[in-house]
Image 1: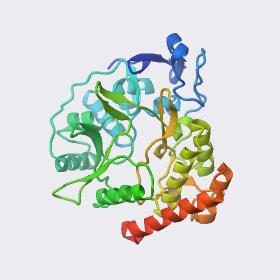
Image 2 (image 1 turned 135 degrees about the horizontal axis):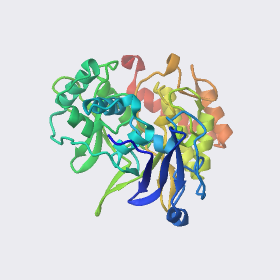
Image 3 (image 1 turned 180 degrees about the horizontal axis):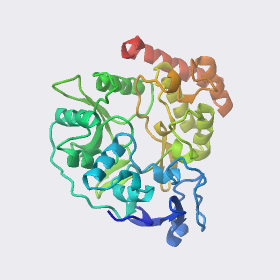
Image 4 (image 1 turned 30 degrees about the vertical axis):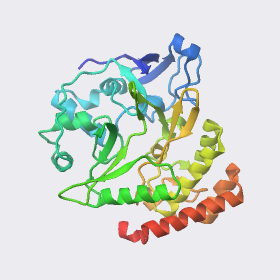
Length: 377
């Protein structure tokens, strides 16, 4: 496989800029001259629209800026990429971040794409979901599957730890998840219940379904919000995680909702988006969704409209390091309650009446819809 010292970064076919290796491993970036005239900053805090070379200061993202690291698969997707590299007689440890972005090419999450893309032969046959679930389980257990090419094609650019495929359902783009080794067999049903409950709490969530199975209670699927079907085809939506924006690792619990609130307000300049995040924070607290790390919050950018908080995703009964919230609530990750929620609201400037109304509505809805949370533990 060719080793890449530079890659073009594209948005809707337009050149945004160039990534180039600096000191053998850092991904230096410079905007294209034409993009500087009428483009937008792809990462406002780290990469303002300036005519200069940007060099990452941190080692969190394999030498990349967070916005480009968001394009890389992690967890399940990275495992599939490494399996494919080994199949092609390539050493995964010898791959730079630019090599991996070249593999992503046009298949990554969000709107950014990368040239030159590595062209591997990929199968496209569609089989039953139970078959994919079994093959995912086999890869996790034995590192082998006869359908590796197909699984790579369907899930090799995905993030998150759980096995998944990205596929079309009735002409729309969906993500369908399968249980990981540590998951309960009913994880699909649980995540679907959580998505329905979140919607009743007034939280914006993508369309979700529980896809049928002969061997379990079903597989959770969610419609992709970084893809929009139009009369002209599929439009890609620029998306950035909070981890990418803040250049902060999602693997370490270093984020607090106070910081996340300030980021949301600074980026969107809209208190309606702040209220959306506050409502989601309340849900995470009352529904025991504690894996609320920095990559589980994202923002979408639309030219002419600006930034907004993305629909909520990865909502389920969960724990993080030490059983605490990955994102603390006013400094409290162990047992945050109403007083902590209200303190976050006060710091960002939400009124007491608004904070109390939202928190109580979410708390009551979670209690009514999910009942005793211990059944999910």
